[in-house]
Length: 131
Picture 1 (tube, helix red, strand yellow):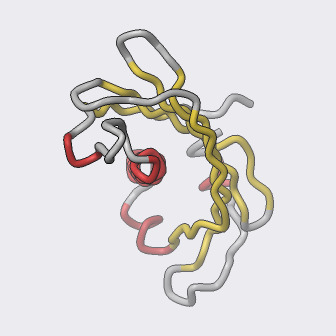
Picture 2: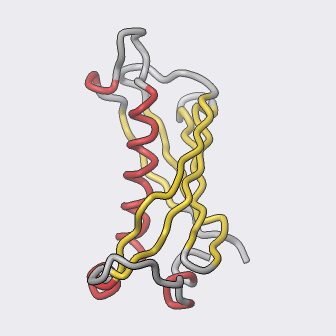
């Protein structure tokens, strides 16, 4: 099965720029987290979102090239796999003008029951939204 990719574009704002005049590393992580949330919202319904929440277990991020104020970038994300209560989501961030890969990342997520905050197995209903 092929994962369903989600992507969105951002024009790098001045607030994302650090003292070295390029995008601050933490911003790339924030954009990855934003992409995960947007993907979940775009695929799930309100009932699922009321029933379940996702929490981060770990992040891995590799910075390949810098981005600068005013550049348009595109954040891609997809669920690479899931097992039990865990899901691995992968990301790539690309500058749209030259298709330069800026960031590769992955996050391990855990699905929780929203009422108990206890881990809960990822059901077929949820997995088929993404794969």
